[in-house]
Image (cartoon, rainbow over all chains, first blue to last red):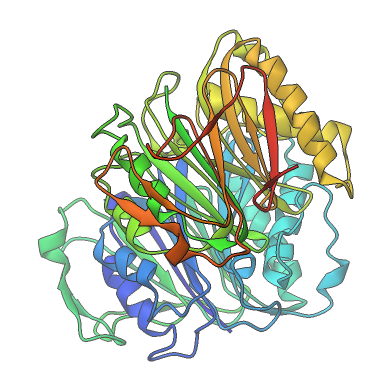
Length: 254
Length: 254
């Protein structure tokens, strides 16, 4: 299994604090040693840092932890491989272009009988069930919406329907974003929290680290964090139900 | 204008030395301050580091310079923007998936009347002439080769023909790779050098740095470096002619 981390915010926000907690689970406080990745959106562009090395040892992860890249939409993943060997092409998140937009996705879980997911347009580069499922989702979106619809929320609701089909094949916790919306789909394990004024302090579970969000934010900031398991032990995270999805737009649940 | 850097090698090789020279041109010894990027292939996967910040100041560039990522195919670019503003989505290299392979591209030059380059399948995310030309090339390949041909060299020769068409619209120096082949297309300014045993020393033009390749290599290593302008002042670089292309496979010109 793997762990997911996502962020949706109404102002460019760094994710150093949450990412620091996640990283420890990549071979230190957790067994997810088969690589890690993180994608940041800045405008319509995005950039991904990834490494097939365990995140707790990765030089690149250290940079990402220390260097505050500010973004309104982030997806991250640490991997404990099941389907597909440990290598760069099997490392999440995956990004593909659709209608001139970068779509990014990461998956936690495992699928069975997934070989019947055929794709025409998008082909996986690696050999994970996860990337194949992503290509299948994109193919389906493209089939239903040959042009980018004005109301992108409808596309994400359609993706949630597709995710339900994939969940019938196994475990399918997923994060998917176009840089504006972040979709969280829960198969069996996903939590989220929205932080807004009045901000308080929070303590990481996996590292000896406390942050006072009041010092880091302005009163109008709204920042949602989504994670497989709660990252802090002194805040109230919402546990999602199997088959439930939540769609966030710039920090707010819609 | 911008500067290009590419590498093709028969064993995974780091590009720290050449990249160190290029970086200096990104706002220090050269005017290319509108961002930079570099893509490394490892197996079928690739990873890109990019930043709209000048490379000579970039924290991420410092990491790439110091942390030896070994690869057989690398493409890098520093940008002095002309078409399209300075932002992440306009930062080279660009990568898209085709037939389940990652194709990466960077362009140096400027096109006119490029709005007639229409694409069906691949759509640009940013608004540069460069990314549009890349999408157009990929669309054309896909049209001619709906499935991946066994002989990939024929595809690269077709790309060189397409590049000729683009050169008719302005200046079009280009590097394009699938991780195995690296194509260098010269419109007006591109140089390359192949290093093999017996290896010697080389001195960077743009930084106070000398490398003794004999200490860094084994006798069977073959490493080609392609750059807009020679990066060293004590080696013999081959200057390419306008309209000329060279195709490299794992270090060797083919």
